[in-house]
Image (cartoon, rainbow, N blue to C red; front, side):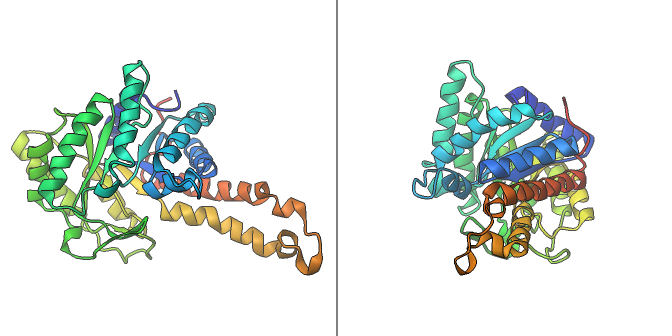
Length: 340
């Protein structure tokens, strides 16, 4: 059972919260980056989450096709085949989906899962993210409630975001201001609008200074205590300990102690993208520089097929990214915790 069933995915998140660790959610854009993620999880003996953004799904469909649903579906079907060879359990997730892409991405993918579930199959993806950070909170929560109801019928866990993640991802730029820090009031409004699981399970990406992109350690001004305040305030009102399953976005450049503090407040999932992108690309650059006269037919020469064969540098790229996934598992304390 390498691709988690809805029940196993719920168990994974419960185990993470109870055990004080979080799963790396690795963004992928191709079959090769998917294989790198699976390899990394296996080498770390960690279960994990593989996710694809709107831009990643569009790219995976083909640069002339540019169809997000096609790319995401292809990834999910391919993952079901290749993940069967790995001794870890993996959940499939779609990353940030803003309002203007709901009808072209998240909603049709949920419809596919509804059809699958009606036939007794598992959903295509185990979770989807609604990113309403760019719209007013009341509209964000109204859409979240509608999507959560549909996800629950499809046996899917929904992820939603309140507050704003700064920096840039897939062309969406988040401003660097006080909206980077979710308020207790925002969290209480969220619990009142979408519940705490009774209307369907969801994960909450509450922001505490998170920024998309690559930054040197210490540059990102995180306030993990924001998560503590949210959990305590909502928990006190509803009589639940750590009521939210929290998600950590924009973790590049974060100090390890900040990551661990965030996990202690109920973070069960942390997105990893820019770091693994670099880890994948760096060995390719090394290969090209070291084999300049082999990968190029310089001065009319024939080059060296062994060095311009995509498999030669592709293997190095996969190994580099896999090693970074292992590091992420170690940092988030999920290494060695696999279910199977």
